[in-house]
Image (cartoon, rainbow, N blue to C red; front, top):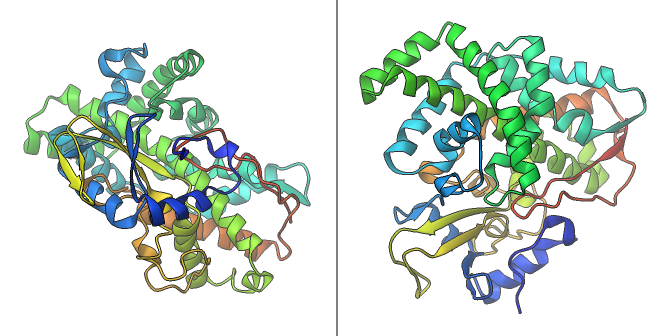
Length: 387
């Protein structure tokens, strides 16, 4: 029996399974779990672009018991919505992005590195990856130091709101922190210089109430915090591992911006932080002569599609010079494509370029990397490096 659902903490190399499935069952019906699992590039692209494949509702009728603030966040996020609701939420997120300032990543990273007690060793994940991306977003929006520290220290609890299945402990944790983060974000947005213009723009286009506009803006700026924490953490972690795990001659190139940016993009293809995304069919879909029926659940294994030999030459080689690395599906495509694509690549490039410029002898202290017990994301728990 083929294993399609597993925790990344339980498997050393998921790419071996993905390779087999692309060759033998690129569109696979998992009878045991009653779900379609897509492994090939073409199959994933078809569903990502399909009007008949929706983001599944993760908390129908609030059966999980989220409190008012957490429920509001969940209901308004662009990443979790469909149809006109998604169009509006996506535009809100885009308008928020357009009003971000340009705070230097290096300054924040320098401050994080100065805090470490051991001057020669560093846990890259806990000291940098879990803090830098969300702090950059917060500072770009002008949040003060107190609020930035509070949100960055507690955002991990709120990221569990994205999980389709939550334990009671996770729900309690989400409810504990959601109200406070919501209130901080709301207070900051209302006081910001750009909010009045943003409110006017949305009202004129969609004729929605000022209360609804404020909710959409607050929830989607929180969505940017969540996205920067989980995906940003994974990008910084996995990219560093690929650079350090390969031929040491790569380290000579790691201080060149163009090469580093190419390496970040290749890392997003070769070893992405997010491995899967989910959809549900809202109508019958024919794919590879198989019929995905209305109501069927679908898992798209984007990390597998990124290693499809029919799309990428020698896909199992980490090659920053490959011409079409940017065609990876890690950020998705179409209407639900990630808005933070360019921001994430720049953040990763800036951070790793700074690391290798400031520290000339970066190396792994422990090559036995353990991963978080997640099914959709491959996130290292720790990366101990010598600097």
